[in-house]
Image (cartoon, rainbow, N blue to C red; front, side):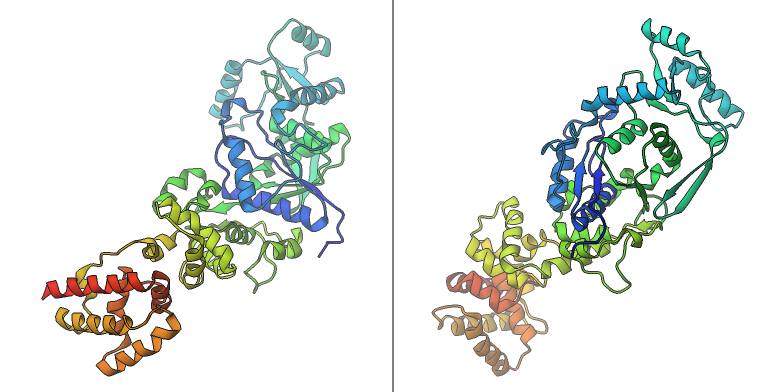
Length: 497
């Protein structure tokens, strides 16, 4: 259902300084949903002007992560578009041009203070228990003097000339009006001494030139929102709609989630990095469902959302600024729901790589038979290897003690296995609906429980105490292998005496 809202242009603008994490993925998801809902555009822009923190391969990982999640962007560094380049490092001259415009109009100035001097100023301010900020040494330099020093090759930065009196007011969609005394704001650097613009200038210029209508980003940028509003106003530009999302808390709910906790999570088989979720057996549909609800809700009842549902129902007005604890139990819950919702053929295709990763030689026909009988029993896709690897083994070697039924001896269990073998060997095919009724009749004749008799067969055929439904499993394993496995179990039981 298309929204009546005008088509938006939104951008996801990560820095290639590490792995794409859950917070970034959620921002990208909300951008994507809003763009698709309104018939607008979703843009990927790589903010790589901090060359010291640049990590090789990070951009490629970001692109791959977005595509795995199904968040296809309309414009970006690897797909092009009408507003490129889409890497900020390639927009250096554009940013410098706009910085010079601010200098000429008196909204910015050249600063020649060395890092050493700035460090001493900061130390002195901290000693006096003042908020560290630039002391304004170069703010009042005569423009002609500053220009002479620039022309002579003296290193410089460009700083924004923040108003020192009055109040700056702007609006965040989730938090309403934000008002800050200008006296509390710093003269932030806009262009570093290496010629690259910092985020504050680069993002403002690029958002304007790329016609961005909504800036959706993390709440860590709230503190600089007034300055970003002032930069827009200095250029005479309209501000976009500002949306600063809630923070993610650690699973304990205590403290903000950060990349430092990643190692601890990995010990429990979890991750905050998108690159890991596929290997851990999660569906992109489930990850999207999960992170969508960490900061947004449709109502107080609905929790299962396909991508189609999210595009139809997402609404910026229903975002919440309240922090959200990362709940991996909830992710497992959603993953199970989305696995159950897959068509068997789709599930078969998705479990195949997990078998291959462990060295199993698979075939598509068998996978198509396995999919429906494991579908109700797995939470993550990688579980198929442990729970249903026996389908692709020539033989299994059960633990002998596991073959002994509860309340029976090894000798009695061997006798049951022999009777089951005799009965099953009379069938030319191991069809589940054909063999189940006579097997249940055998249970009655033996005066035992289904758990006792079928428990022996389950361990014999699968090598496991817990498996997918027994008779369906036997059908897939096939007559010859089933009989061979039961015979091996009889031998093991007889050897126990």
